[in-house]
Amino acid sequence: MAPRWLALLARAGQAKWPLPGCASYRPSSSSAAAEATSDRNHLIYTQEHFALRASLRKIIDKEINPFVDKWEEEGQFPAHQVFKILGKAGFLGVNKPIEYGGLGLDFSYSMAVAEELGNIRCGGVPMAIGVQSDMATPALARFGSDELKQQFLAPTIAGDVVACLGVSEPEAGSDVAVSDRNTLTKTKMLVAVDIVKLPGVHVAKKIEKIGMRSSDTAQIFFEDVRVPSKYLIGEEGMGFTYQMLQFQEERLWAAANILAPLENVIQETIDYTRQRKTFNQPILYNQTVHFRLAELTTELELLRSLVYRAVALYIQGNDVTKLASMAKLKAGRLARELTDSCLQFWGGMGFTNEVLVSRLYRDSRLLSIGGGSDEVMLSIICKYMQTLPKKQHL
Ligand SMILES: Cc1cc2nc3c(=O)[nH]c(=O)nc-3n(C[C@H](O)[C@H](O)[C@H](O)COP(=O)(O)OP(=O)(O)OC[C@H]3O[C@@H](n4cnc5c(N)ncnc54)[C@H](O)[C@@H]3O)c2cc1C
Image (tube, rainbow, N blue to C red; front, side):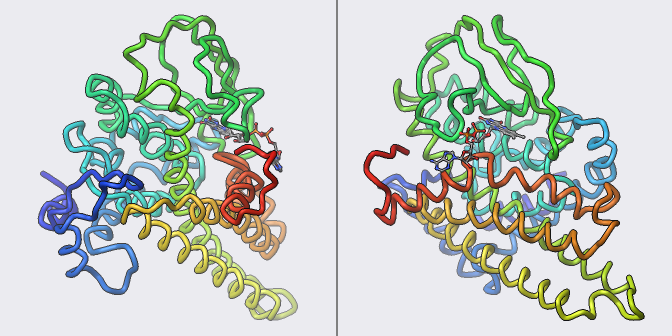
């Protein structure tokens, strides 16, 4: 039986496959009609978005969260098993074309999924899901040939394969343009893995990390790998441009995905400090504690507003590179600040592996580095502010 949220979506008649940023893109009239009847308390979500989230939450509570501690301990999670469950329920392709198994909805639905995935009690599993749905596949979905999409996109959406995105190289991390070449012999650093079994592709040993432990990471070597020319996505020489376009979604996804974890950490810190007493009163009663939590909650709401505004503009067809970069920058910095402050209020307990705050303190550190470091985000923002010295290249 189709999930309830799918029926709601069908009723709303919102199925579409827009290409934000394209001159020809216009919000469809069916979408406008749905907005008119939507929940007016939310900037970008309608009752269909909330139904989608509720359905995903059930999967998270039943199929993911009960096993997260074990996966973190083991240093990996059963991606094929988890992705099959998510794929079957439609969560790996909400904004992908219907003809390849997607739901054909707009990017705001991907954001709703990204946000809900933040309720998974670690960073590694949602990150891997996001790579599959919103980082490794957008360029393929937009610019790939029908044959390529049948071969690679459809099974990715169905959860039959686990996708990865190999942008970073030993000499090309922040400077993505350096890796825009069509060489067949290179090394990809730090890739969350599931490997194409092609001759010449070698996976080096797993890399131990301070966080994101349940998502295994490895270095991949490509040695004279023969890639058929029919596998070229879009036009030759356009890879960098496609990746830059894709980065808008990746960065918004990352910012949306951190909202729930940070909210959860604040709430769990309130609960803990309310019941834990020192000097005959709950720790929460110290003004320095409750004021700080109020301040962090305010910061989190500011981030949320920025994310929603950027998404609203994006689904209307605007280029939101600047806002998406700001959201990613703020998300990374706030995650560091918030988890550090909250961990402090947990005292020694915060330094153990027993509590969510310590795991997020470690996991969310990646947000300021991966998918473009804080400094790269600042450079992009400066470019839009026209304050970047000419010699720098982004
Ligand atoms: C757990 C994990 C998973 C990852 N998964 C993937 C993946 O799936 N696919 C993939 O392609 N990559 C992946 N990466 C790589 C990640 O995207 C890169 O680490 C990131 O882009 C930064 O590149 P780099 O590590 O080479 O840092 P570098 O480019 O060496 O930069 C190091 C530091 O220098 C500073 N810096 C760099 N440029 C500037 C500048 N212009 N101005 C000022 N300061 C600057 C920044 O502080 C930066 O953090 C992953 C990384 C990790 C840790």
